[in-house]
Image (cartoon, rainbow, N blue to C red; front, side, top):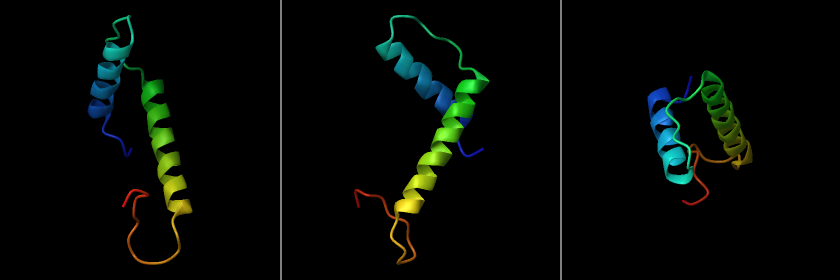
Length: 62
């Protein structure tokens, strides 16, 4: 697991509270699995798009 579950839960509930009229109080394991999967996919895409030179992985905004 590469995500910190409690931080993801806090952030998701904070976003839901700010943008949705319904009050959410729980986050399912399926939601957490989706966040984990999408995070791994995003990292994989960033690494794959990085040039094959140097020793440091850099962000697009550096």
